[in-house]
Length: 319
Ligand code: HEM
Image 1 (tube, rainbow, N blue to C red):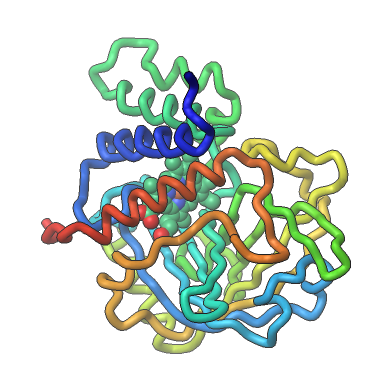
Image 2 (image 1 turned 180 degrees about the vertical axis):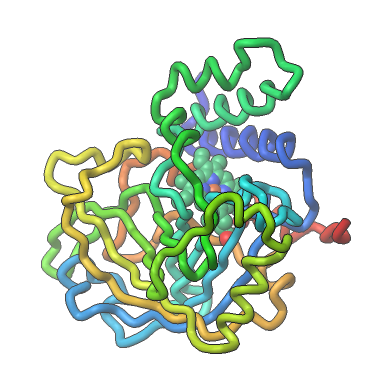
C-alpha cells in the first residue's frame, strides 16, 4: 500500500538529508546546508502600499522585530568565503510577531532552483556524488543535466561573488499566495534588495579574499550603521505558473514594495542562537499562504529534521 502523502514527504526528507551528509560530511551541530552563517537583529517597517497585497499581521502594524541569518552555500561550516561553492548565499528572515509566534522568508542569491521537486533534487545530488574526477564518461551529472534543462540552466547561471552580503539581492524562488483584507488573492515571489545597491567582485579578485571576508565585513559594516534591505514582491499575472520554482515569470511583471528592514546588530551569542533557530519556508500566517510548489512541504520537513538534529548535537571543534 502506498504511504500517505505526509509520510512520503518525511521519507524523502530523510533520504535527502542522508544524501547531503554524504556530499558534505556530517558536521555535528551545524546545518546540513547553508552551514556557515551569522545572525543579526533589527526592525521591519511595512510600506504604505503593502496592504493592497496582504493582510498579514507584520504588514498591518507599524513595525516588527526581525532576526536575519546570512549564510554561505553548502553544508561545510568552515567553507572559505572565497570558495565558488559558497555561492549562492542565503538570507533567512524571521518576523517576530509575538513570543513564539513568527513568520519567515528563506531566500538565496539566485532566482532559480535546479529541479521542480525533491525527488528530482535527490537524483541531482546522487548524480553529483557519482561524478567525481575518476568517474567514467559520460558522468552521471552530464546525463542528468542533458535530460533536465532547468538544472542545466541553474548550473550554467553565473554565481558571482558579492562585495558584501549586504550588497547582494536574494530571492525566495517559490511563489506564495497573498490575500488582502478584501479577500483578493494574488500569487507573488519575494525579492530582497539591498539599499546599498548590488555589487559583485570579478571572479579573479574574489579568489584572493580572506576565508572569513564576508562575515567580518558584515560585522564591520553594522558597527558603522544599519544594514538595510527592501522587500518587494513580483506579482504573477493570470495564467502564470505558480507551483513550479523552475518556471520564471517575465521581468515585466508588477513589483509591489512590501516594506524594508534594517539590521542594527549581530546577535550576541551567535553560535548558540544559530544552533537553536530553525527557519521555516512555509509562512504559516494569515494573509500569506503556500503555493502548490512541492518544494515547500518537503523543505519544511527537512529543515525541521536537520534543525532538531543540530539542537541535539554537540558541535565539532573547528579544524
Ligand atoms: C529540495 C530543495 C531543498 C532542499 C532539500 C534544501 C535543504 C536544506 C537544508 C537541509 C537546510 C538546513 C536547514 C536547517 O538545518 O535549519 C537548508 C537551509 C537553507 N536553504 Fe534549503 N533546501 C532546498 C531548497 C532551497 C531553496 C529553493 C532555497 C532558496 C530559496 C533554499 C535556501 C536555503 C537557505 C537560505 C538555508 C539556510 C537557512 C538558515 O539560515 O537557517 N533552499 N536547506
